[in-house]
Length: 261
Image 1 (cartoon, rainbow, N blue to C red):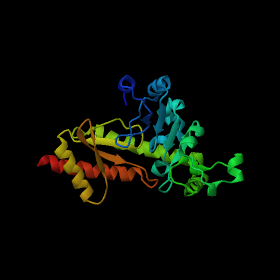
Image 2 (cartoon, helix red, strand yellow):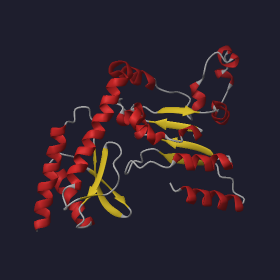
Image 3 (cartoon, one colour):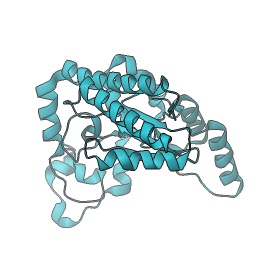
Image 4 (spheres, rainbow, N blue to C red):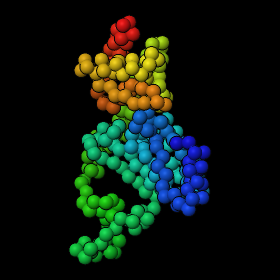
């Protein structure tokens, strides 16, 4: 998200008599793990009184590592924030961790109170009714599986997991950068590397098809600036340097065969 474009959009809405309701900024986009400039975005939202939600579904887990907390600069502007422990924090699907600065506004919007739900504990404020934090009335005990992960791994275990993913992505990206048949398609601050063949979109798409067809790796793709790119994502605690090197060897060999034809 570009702050100047956001400001222009808000001002255009206001000029048209439209009230901007919410801005959603992202820490670690799905496509490339890009990080929006929260300090600038947050200041604009605060200036205009617009709710700022921060979507850190993937990269929120990175904040367990002090050296990666740069990605959360400006998060103090957030009115709400979420990240998914099931994406990079070793928790089974599905599990979303949600925070809101003022729960009163959220509850006011979502609370329903038919007579059969009324009770003394709720009315006295002795309990927090999380049913009022969401659209469904019922909810599963998702926090339990996250608690197990936190108790088993501890903070140092989780940091080691995240750091391993970042290091392995760096290792793979270094191979890409050193081979002039390839190029990195985007920065890789976390555990995802986006890359392509400068030979073009068709060549990159065919490379993806060939390596996935072997059954030895499973890569995905995206488009960055309109151009096709392959994505190598690392998330399993069982992934090692040997796996990353094997993936690179497979890609290198397949690219050699493809570009020779």
